[in-house]
Image (cartoon, helix red, strand yellow):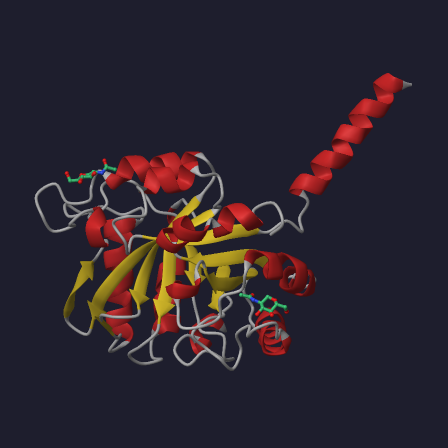
Length: 296
Ligand SMILES: *[C@@H]1O[C@H](CO)[C@@H](O)[C@H](O)[C@H]1NC(C)=O
Ligand SMILES: *[C@@H]1O[C@H](CO)[C@@H](O)[C@H](O)[C@H]1NC(C)=O
């Protein structure tokens, strides 16, 4: 009897652990030199998705520029090409690594359909499966592109998504992810998200009082979450949060409040994908991902 009982029991535990309801944690890395290396970030075991931030300037005639704060200077001699080894280590652990374009500061706009096409070509050749003599992160092929568009105009992002998706038939899938603001629909990415081409959408439930969590109040967050999870044709939707109170102007939820009050409410959504945190630096300050890992 015991010999049959134990395998069945183990199987139940296995299903509970890796069941399809389990979410993952997405993190932003790259905007603070004191947040550990990319390899160390992936070695924590806390993250399933890492967004390298940011390609902060591009479009409308600008030369695309990458900034990785104190980690490395993409435009000096050695540059950041040695990040390739770290990227490959992350991917070997099953972690998806994206290049995040946009961000808060910086200048970016797409001026035309042709501008969107050219940026897609640039991203393919410099960060994805294409080839270029100037690949800023070396030869590693990233898993996709993250749209963190928080300024400029709402034009041509849908076309950029279509051009990038066009590379899917060249071998490895190009994941498309996005970090819109929680007011629905998003002022910049609303149209692009309706293309249905996005895999993961980490909605920023912070620095947006109308839809973020506030001192024990979950109603605004819950209303916005319902819109995002029912009206956006993306594969998975994530709750984006600051990893520390000082990481953003409002929206911080303590890990215990998150796991006791918020996750039980939002996890019911079919498209629930997990939690996104800004950023690795702030996560180091609070241990946020370690506190919630396993309950996401
Ligand atoms: C990559 O090279 C830069 C510049 O030499 C160095 O500061 C950085 O620590 C290196 N990073 C890795 C991951 O080896
Ligand atoms: C946590 O929840 C309590 C009780 O609802 C609330 O008073 C407090 O402001 C919340 N704090 C954070 C940071 O989530």
